[in-house]
Every structure is written in structure tokens, then in C-alpha cells.
Image 1 (cartoon, rainbow, N blue to C red):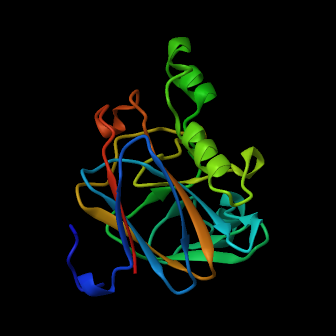
Image 2 (image 1 turned 90 degrees about the vertical axis):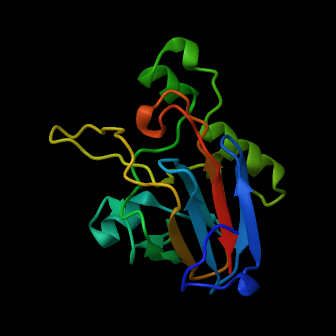
Length: 211
């Protein structure tokens, strides 16, 4: 238990787990429950996908979320919408201040393009997503891995329209609280990226709590 503030007490925590860098996590969060994602050591990326538990084809949509809130960044008050226009989760508290929803997940292809050909087969978030989806027995597969949220990641858009994978704006112990507006299944890849200086080339753990 590393967090202790007015938002909750230890006795009403239903779940508390440390997710190591490079690992994936998939878990149900019921309507009304809150998921807290903690950036334990700072500037780590929590690549996240969200699904309607009763219909996984109804899933987080970056396009619908950005269009509805007219903002490419996420923070307190952001409503995370599905491709069917349904409200999946709401960010109810955020001590980081800004999260990316357009940078996507690292993959064999992006490792090759951004870094070099010999980085193609390094572990990636897309690999983690696929591994969790295939093994969860919850009717998720390759086609369900769509555009994701990168909690704690800083990806400003430059004036010429390109993305800049910049130094992080998070820090040790920063967190984001997500309230489930319906029963949802949350899939997280704790990014294993070793080539991006935003995490000082040192991926670190996340803490995940539900209450």
C-alpha cells in the first residue's frame, strides 16, 4: 500500500497489484468502482484499452473521445467514449495533468520506423496486448487491439502536425483515477520500451488499485 490520501482508506480497497514493466494486465472494473493507476517511479507509460464487459466490440475509441471533448489530451473530467458513443469511464482525479490518446502503442513496426531495423523484434505493448487478449478467455483477439490511451505519456503535436514523443510530465507517485460508468474490462500494457528517453531508458512498475 503506497498511497494514502483522502480519496480512500485501506479497508475499502478491493484490489491492489503491482504490474512490472513489460507485463500486461486485464481485469473487470464494475460500474461505480474506481481504478487507480499509479506511476510508481515516474514517467512510465500505461498503455490502456477499455471494453464494455457485456459486449467487447463496444470499446474505447480515441476518435469519439477526442471529438466529443474537443481535446487530444486527457485529464480530470475527460469522458472516455466507445466506438458506439457509450460512456465507458470518466477520469475523476488526476495528479499528472495530461495524458496522451493519439501516440498509439509501440509495436514491431514502430520500433523499426522510430529506432532501427534491429529493434523490430524487441518486446512491445502491442505484443503485450495480444498476449493478454488471446489468453483471457473473454472473446478478445487481434481485431480488438485498437487505438489506446497512454497514461502518463507526453506526446505533444508540433506546429507541422508531427508527433513529438517528449520527456514525460509525470513523476513518482503520480496517479489517475478512472470511474467505471458501466461494467468494463480494462487491458493495460506496462510499456517495455527501452529506446525512448522519456523514461530514461528504464521502464518501471505501475500500481493498480480498485475500490
